[in-house]
Image (tube, rainbow, N blue to C red; front, side, top):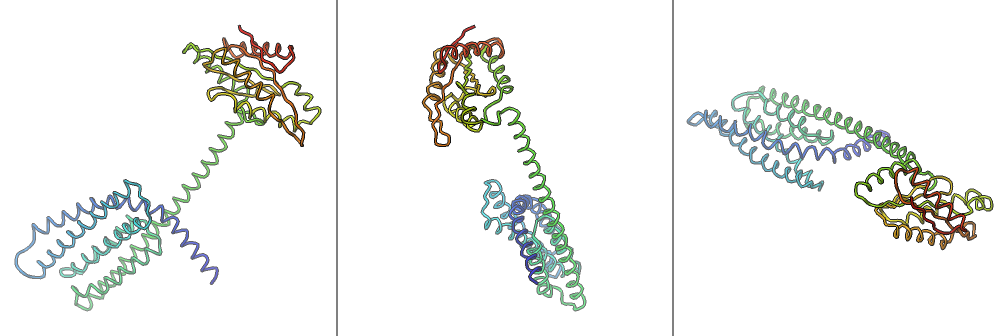
Length: 386
């Protein structure tokens, strides 16, 4: 019993979660019901008015009942359709309001089927309106089985008690009541099948969406590792070259100056030798953070390899390039690099060159400038122009 109860509660919770999404679909369909059913209502009203016989009698009463029921249907479904349209258009997700609209629409359409079928008993024993209403509601609306069972049981109960008002021949009354069970049963099972198919489709879509997200994350990761240095998170050499060539071409079109800063951490080998490679990696990462926080948003920073970094300065004058280089040198020199309680003093040498011709040409000039910076005692900035 505990197992059965647990599974029932699990199904009910699952249906409740799916019903929130299904409610939006139902609201959208109610918008369509207004004009679709409205057209059918108007046709019935017009035809029954045109062909209504004169004088008293059961036939005339039947005509009047049909016209009245279709008129009420036209007004009620139209009103619900307008309300559903406002909900759908304004993206209102107030679940209580949504539930009210969809449950009311389901209820009134089933009720109209009952009323039409009851009125038809004045002239025939068929239950076509009830059958159409039960099947129509089950096809149009996505209804969890528990709700569907309650709706169709209510249909049977209401119809069972109302049909004697117009059908008082005992054996025909029994026949009609039995047929109503068939109509409600067909409606319920179609509704159940539609719900199961909907849940299956949504589950498959969720699985596909999840797989697509995983694939997208993997693609983004592959793209990241293809363009970034995995230690510092900066662009890698190859991607920097691609960005450099694009920026250089763009600067030629705009007639802007582009400058290149080539940085090298001074005596980095001794840091690895004295403190170990993990500390060396820490120094590289900290230096990368300082560089990222110091440069401008338009600048492009990359790690070329080892302890060497490179920065592209688009739309920059020679004075601005020198100032940026000096700011970087000062920030590195004054930063407290700490490891295992020890403070490690770090400096950088920086070579500056104007971006021209190609990456290789610009890099060669910056590397020459860097060589001069190291030759002249390190921890300084040198510039070489083409």
